[in-house]
Each structure stands twice: as structure tokens, then as C-alpha cells.
Length: 189
Image 1 (cartoon, one colour):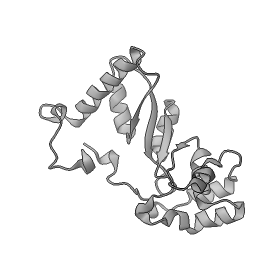
Image 2 (cartoon, one colour):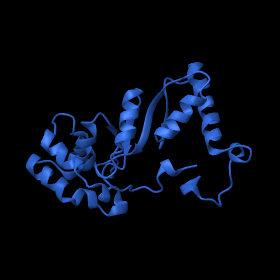
Image 3 (tube, rainbow, N blue to C red):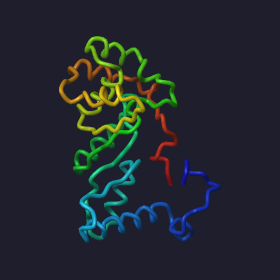
Image 4 (cartoon, rainbow, N blue to C red):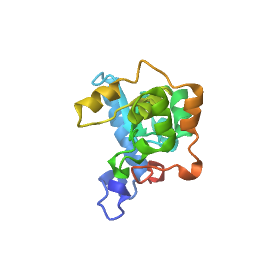
């Protein structure tokens, strides 16, 4: 449901005696069947936290691996527990919101730690944020309406941030951590 709107009509699987976990499980069974019947090469999820992934695995009759989990990911929302879980279970994380979105008016692109690293590297702030994710093994899917920015966004694979630069970007204080896209999927029923 959009933003977990309590007034939105529930899908049939979530109506009592059902639940959102039972909806996710039913959907996953359908995806697993498609995978096991070779109708798709891979299946993935979006905005699943560790709890949601564990529920899927516990509910699975036959386990078709989760190939990808697309989540919000940037220095202000690094999700270390989810990254660890996905790495341990060979689930590729795909980042959205890596540049902070226009919802924040470009605040992440102007953050002093980002601009400092960008200046030292002679790269754009967007490239620094994308490289930060890529260097941790997280795929990125930035969007842009500018051909120049698209080209720039692709130019993050032939250079690396130093360990001190990664540490600077990782040093966002927990009190400053935030999600750009609300609500937090971990709070979903």
C-alpha cells in the first residue's frame, strides 16, 4: 500500500485472516514457481529489510534464490545490517536514491564531506556518491534527464576512492542519518 495508508483498501491476501506477511509469501511463491518453471532467469524484491527476507526464506517450500533487493542506499542511509545479510546470502543490492533525489533539493550533492572529496578527486559530487556505493559492491541506478549527467554517472568504474575518503563518507553521524523516501519499509506490517 502506498505509504502504508491505513485507509487504502487491502488486497484480498491481507484481509483477515490474512496479513501482509502472507501476501508477501503468496507473491514469492508465484515468483518461485516462475523461476522453477524457467519462465524467468532471476527474481528479486524491492524495499525488503532483513526481517522481510528472513520471512520469505522461512515461508519458502522450495527455495529460489533472491537475486536482487532494490533499496534506498547512500551515506545518510547505509543500511549495514541489510548489506551484511545480503552479502551472506548472495543477494545483490541495487541502490536507488544514491544522489539524494530532488526531494532534498540536492542537499547530499552539496554536503561538505561530498564536495570535499569531489574537489580532491576532480570528480562531480554525484560521481563521488555513486562510487561510494559501487565500491561497496552495491549496484546503482541513478536517473537523469541530462545527457551530460548520464555520461558522468557512468564514469565511476575506472577509479576508486581511498580508504580515508570512504571513511569520510561513512562518517555521517547516526543522528544525521535519514531516509529520503518515506516511510521506512522496515516499519511495514
